[in-house]
Image 1: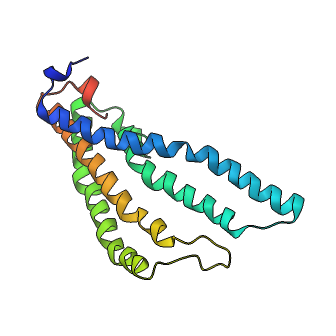
Image 2: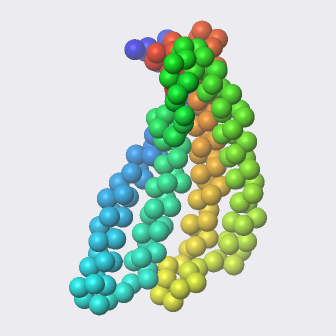
Image 3: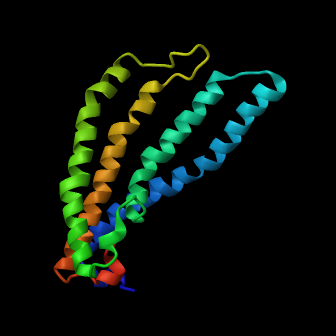
Length: 183
């Protein structure tokens, strides 16, 4: 493994970007357990005690959104997004790096720009009116929930840039494909 003095500034930048996705992914992962506990509580309260709680039900939705929206960049970092591997896995490491570079430039980054740009007015209006739940007894802060859209676009874009740079370094023979490529 390389020591930090042996890696290029570009590799250090990629690692810094990776650390953002690593942090958001690992810090939101614990919400899945809490989400299960809250969902079980909602079901128990409703079916055993006849008590309903809109706020508790909505909290599960909020946690679910946090896990998926903030976990998307982490999933990209780990190479766990859905892809059709029929051809990809048979490619050489350099060919895989090309696929990753083109995928970042042609698909991921344009999609994230579209989502970020497209959601901006929607989120801004929600903040302007401090949008809350439409259900009586629901949670306020729907504007915070909607803010996850551009936040997800930024975090996935940063990780896509990290993947792009990592694979460009492989293609330029600056980083070894086995250690640094997301293949």
